[in-house]
Structure formats: C-alpha cells, structure tokens
Image (tube, rainbow over all chains, first blue to last red; front, top):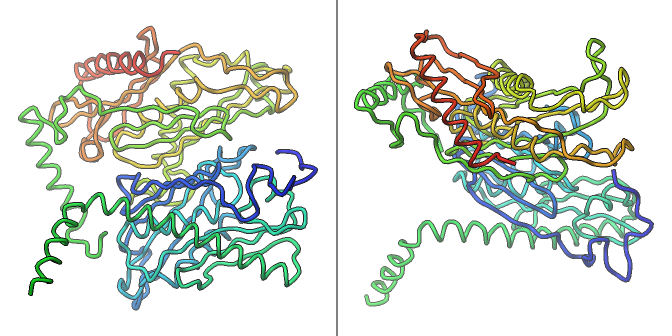
Length: 255
Length: 265
C-alpha cells in the first residue's frame, strides 16, 4: 500500500492536480457484453468496473418471488487482482454490505411493480479498484439497467466526497480515501432525491452540509456524462428514425 | 429482456439441436465457419495495473480476463525448493444467465484445473527459479481467471489468457524486499484447443450452442515443439481412436497458428 502523503493539498491543488470540486476523468462504454440483457463498462480515474443486468427473469427459489413486484438483486464483487494485495475470490462482509446499499439505491427508481414474480439481477465486477468503487459500480449499474430497457423513473448517479487537510473535496482518490479524515458516498436521482448515503470519518454538521452539496454537484456532473453516453449510443443505433421523425414533424405543421 | 418465457429450455435445446445437426450434415456451421476454423481472437495484455500480469482475451463474443498476482509464501513440505502455481476460475453470474453466484462448482473447477495442467505439465514456468530460500520462502503465482461474457469455449479463451498474462508477468521483488523486479521466466507457450464431436463431425472452437449440444468435447494442450502436455475429454458420448487422432492433429495446427499470431515473445 502507498505511504501516507505529508500533505494532500499543495497550492490549492490536490495530489493529482485536481481542484477541490473536480471529478476524475470518466469513460463510459455501453453494451460491452453480449449475453447480458444490458451492460456497461466504466472507467473512473484508475477504477475499472463492469456492470451487467439480467431480467426481468424468473426468480428461483420460488418462495422468494413477490406477487406484487419484481425482486431486485445486486451483487458487487471485486476481482482478486483488482487491488495491490490479492484478495480471496468470492463474497466477504464488505461486498455483502455494499451489495445491499447499492441495491437499495435503485429500488426507489425501478418500476418493479411492472414485473411481479420476477427478478431483476444487477452484477457489478470491480476489475481494478482505486477508491470509489461502489459509486463507480452504481453509475455503471444505472446505465446497464437503462441499456437492458428496464423502466426507471430516473437514472441514479453517484459520487463520493471527503475531507483531506481540513478541506471538503469531491471524488476521493486512493490516498485521500485511505488517509483522509472522512468519506461520504452519495447516490441520487435526477430530482435530487438521495438514494444512497454513507459516511465514515469525522465531520462537523456544517462540514457535512457542505459535503452533501458538493456531492450533489458531483452527481449532477456524472448524470450529464451518463445521459450523454445513452444519447450517443441510442441516437447512433436509431439514426434512421431521426429523419423519419423530422419528416413527420414537417407533415404536422402543414395541417 | 425476457418478460415471458415462451418455451422450456428443453424444447429450445431440441429445436437448436435439429437445426445445428442438419447444418453439420450439409458441411456448414451456424456462424458460417468451416469445421476447423477458430472465431476471431483478440488479446490485450497489461490491462490491469494492480495485477503483476494480465490479459483480456476475446474469442468471438466470449470475453475472459486473466490476472496474475505474485506473492512470497511457504513452499509445500514435499517440494521445498520450487515455487507454487495456484489457478482459480470464476464463472461469475455476470457472464451468463446460467451461471450462479457461489463457490466454484465442477465447471469452473474443471476449467481452472485444465488450464493449470497445461502450464504445469509443459514446464512452461521454471518453478525452481521461483525458490527464494529453500524450505522457507518461494514465489506463489496466483492465476485468476475471470469469465466476463460466455459466448462458448471459455476454456480455450482462459488458457490463451493465462499464458498471455504470464508472458507479461513481473516478479515483484522490489515490493517484497526480495531483490529487483524481473520478468517471470516463461519457457514454453502451452495452448489449449477444444474440439467437439457432433453428428460424426469434428468442430473446432465450439460456439455456445455447439458446445451445449455436442455430446462430447476433447481439449488438447500442445506446446511450441508440438508435444502434448495435457488433455481433457468432457461430456457423455464416446470418441473413436480415429477421431482422437484427428482432434490432436487439428489442435496442434490451431495452437501453432495462435502462438505465432499472438503469443510469440
């Protein structure tokens, strides 16, 4: 593991040259997987995550089915080689907790009532981890759900804030996460309803309010990129329809 | 998106079987390949910088990510002066609607063991050179195979990925105060090639449907000099001697091509 840096902020810039309210670069690829109903590959700084969605599909065992709505299932998993020291493959307490809160981040937005007795499965694999993997996973999962055509009220966008050297900063990198004073992952909808909120570390209430506002601004930026990725993908695929739509619109105005 | 399940999987399998069987009788495959033709392969190495070696292999729509981690550890008591290879494969539920979460089951274990066998038996890695202090400390090589998308024949993709990742692996001496970093000594390039028997014909690199429907498959791992370092027959149907000889020959030719195209150092 890397050493604790002496200072996190030098001349108003962070270790990687970012300002306090700046995100790491995000790269999004939609539908990289063939078998999944929807998928998304997302790079965020040095994080690399893959999300896949299956469903709505039959839920087994049957006694877990809900007669009034689909059951959401979320599995967050880290590849054994995604961190410096190899981790044992499979679920552990940390990944089980992250899976739970991530699932709950989506339950308010997915129209589960449309698909009684089914399961909607979301799988997130962290292939390379560098702080903020749960928020990266949620952002990728959000797009994978959209890619799978699952009806949703809103995309979910997530971002973490934290505190280093007494300053509230957006989107913690590895060193800031390991040795910083606080870490606050947040997920929200377009309507700015918070669907995931966790915190560890030490903040005054005033600092927390500031952190929450900063996290929301980060989520808004992430949302812009998510939206852009969807528009680019689905505009390209249906470019023919665009021309049709234009001629249709022309027809209407003549009447 | 699957809101309604139209037919049971058994019925679908029966229809699929008849369709593929009739194609094979005409000398054709559903994706237009000849019987001894591989799907398109791409190999990208060093994709994961937290791993000491890594490779992303695509074989048709199959995607496999292999990461290698190297750590010092204790040797086995009966082999105190050689390094250790541990191969693990995960059929994660992301890769296929048929895979379920949980500890590796027989499919994943078979893949890991066949890949491991090829690397071990080919003596591709000089395990003696991985000894740091006899009886106390050796390098342990963890080969972790992560199947991302199952488009069929994940075993061959895993095998190609494993050796490609090993070829780019660094022994992290500096990280553990064991001297300088150096490349992992790789002496040979074992490649596993799977052929399925179906309708009396032999089909190289089975697609997902071909793999499901074929009664039996034979995986042959060959080395640079054409020698064989591992085999695995899988499935319930028998094979004739003549078929086995032809499969070995096909595997050798295909492995040679993959080796010269992608894996020569």
